[in-house]
Image (cartoon, rainbow over all chains, first blue to last red; front, side):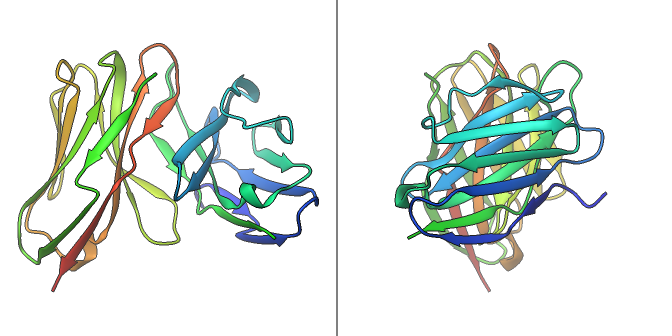
Length: 115
Length: 112
């Protein structure tokens, strides 16, 4: 398996623009997580899905952020409109569980810069 | 709210030395604890996962221990190598849900 795939790897955009980050989890995994990592706040969980259903989105910073998982092999994280404080590395992770989260496998991340 | 703390924040050692990284958490009601490695500009790689009912896990030169009652875990690295240089993060999964809470990490440098 190729592991968790994220695209793009780098994104530079201007304030106010819409940004869409993409993730393909490991085939067969039933949990998918979106994290944000910054120097100031470390690694934070934004939202996670189980069997394509959002379970906990309490980490989503505000309404400008939205995430979807239309099928088991694809998820998006959208920021609209983007702001400079959204600049961070966004990670997607997936895991296979038997009722619990299990060991998480991370993608390489998308480095977002909002100017 | 669960809080995870890692000490030290940074560590520099000569090659060959044995070392210990520390992780503490405030709420002992956890389901498991994981140790991850992160290389610069890369994602996280899971190193070891310890279930709450376990005391330790070993993988090669790595040994992780868990004392749930005191809210502590240690990652022991034997005979350190320059290739071990990375940031090491611990994360706990709470018993009440499936969230992972991460520590800030320890940045390890092993000098040849």
